[in-house]
Amino acid sequence: MKYDVSKKPTRGAQRTLDAFSGSLLALLAEQPFEQVTVNELCQRAGYPRATFYNYFDDKYDLLDYGWMRIGAHLRLDEASSMDAEEGLRTCFDRAYDLCVAHLDAVKRTLAHNAGSGYLLNHLRGIMQTEIRALLRACPERVASRIPYELIADHYGNTLFLVLEWSLLGERRCTKAQAYEYLRYLLAGVLHDVPQGGTQGGTEDGDATADLPPRARR
Image (cartoon, rainbow, N blue to C red; front, top):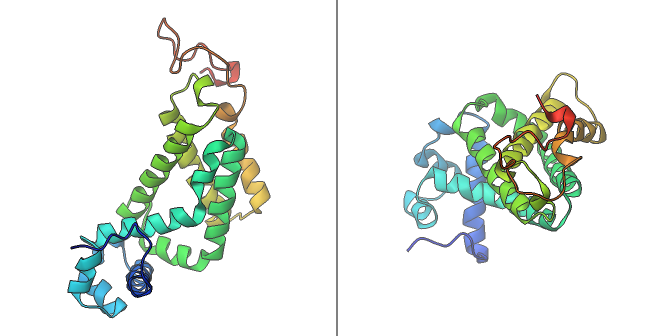
């Protein structure tokens, strides 16, 4: 029976999980995720294939576990009780600090894993799912005319853009300045949200009718 990685692990299980997670991170700094094999993961971790399959179905399952650990570290669920701007600031601060703490590893990984590859596309998908869950619970959601799924995707894409630009671009900037860029880019959904009414547009089908004037194009 496969080990349940979502429960609190024993010390022995944690050592095994750490070994496989570490081997994946090391390999991602050397090659695209698509080229990583279970054999390589086991060789780096120092465990046989049988042990790997006691914990994971495949390398994609291991990657999901890695994202789960990152999510637990970021504690994004705490933002669900905050207003939109406070929640955004919390998400950005934690993501920025995590990237800075592991910036060399992030750079090496991105050197081998393009933005169009599986690794980053998968991460974007997970982040958007998490942000959708946060916005679904956000106390301001019911007041927005814009579907929260669309807002979540916009948040996630813009967050990635600002993190990449501020940490990896030629014109790096401070966290405070990066957040101001993010806040400005998201101003249309952080401010001037009309109150009352139904989400997603008006009865006559004009989804832009209730948006602030500067957002109508």
